[in-house]
Image (spheres, helix red, strand yellow):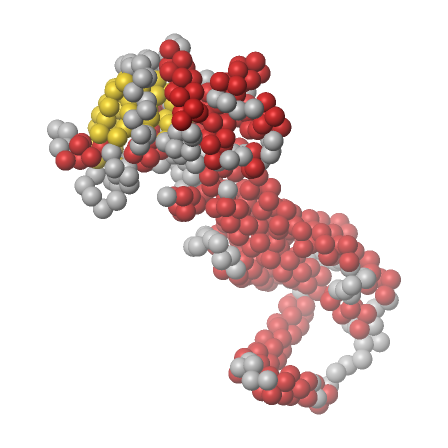
Length: 266
Length: 217
């Protein structure tokens, strides 16, 4: 990386344990019952990030296409699994649909960013592609989870109204439209809000990292702008796809509302 | 037959499933009777294709229901719930909303007829612009009834339509329903706990408790 990076040695890293002691002190003093999780979490942070460091070093050295593809696929799959599990209003949602939505949205946006805007050589350069996908997936994952959850919750809340529309000959799409809109709005709102406050309330992690790494702040800002906009695009596409795949699941093949949506009525 | 169902079977509660058949000529009304919870609403919801039957077929003008796409069926065999859900917006928006759907596109309600129906059903003209969520139970059920009449269904499935109405509104309601049934190609099913529908023309009865005791062969 840039020559101006201030390296942290392993000896210096051990000092960060001091910070854990402070957190642990507060946790045990107030008997928060978090001590075990804190220790376990600290260990995991060290182990996971160190491993990722090695994996990334290895991938950057390899600098070839197939490993990058494999890693981004794996990342998408894990993100899809996590998104599907984070939806209290939805039970047993197929991971595959979330996976397809995430894959389509991140690959489309990711290729625009790496191929058109950053344009590294080679175009699949893991040093660019992997962090970009990480940021896209991290945000899309939350977005689609919120959208999916809201779609189900809103459909349940409006079940009587949806059925009333059906009795006038509404198609499932016509009957569910307002819930779909609500779901997309919910999924996109956090991302759009972050566009408003970025740089004022929060200095985003990516930009901070680059600046700490010694990069020119103006360059870091340009990267950050690209990152913010690409995240918004990926979240929008991901939510749209997943909600599009999902709304039909709320209806039977005869176009009636599924019993699990409207059960509260009787 | 104008509207009929044959060997329609469905389970309600933990008891043995029903197997029901009935047939209506145009102008007739079938009153579905039985104690609460016996499955009267379920029967209407099944006929509206809001939930599936475990067997049997319903026919509209001799056409079996599987030959008619469900949106078209539901607009023709229109179900009015006991506690009808009104749409967001004013009462006028509620009358207009169904006509924004593809199934009913190209048609629109006749404002003079809507006004006349409101008047006959003792709804003041000021209600027109009122937010539908602020209506009383009795107002809401009459608005839902008018909303249903406006789309010109062939069969009305009415679930306790007068439960929230007072004496005068009930009489007015049955007056409107009786007049409506006199039009060409119309029939209705009615679930009601009171006996005040007895002046209606073309009455037929289906007693669910009876049919459970002696299942039809």
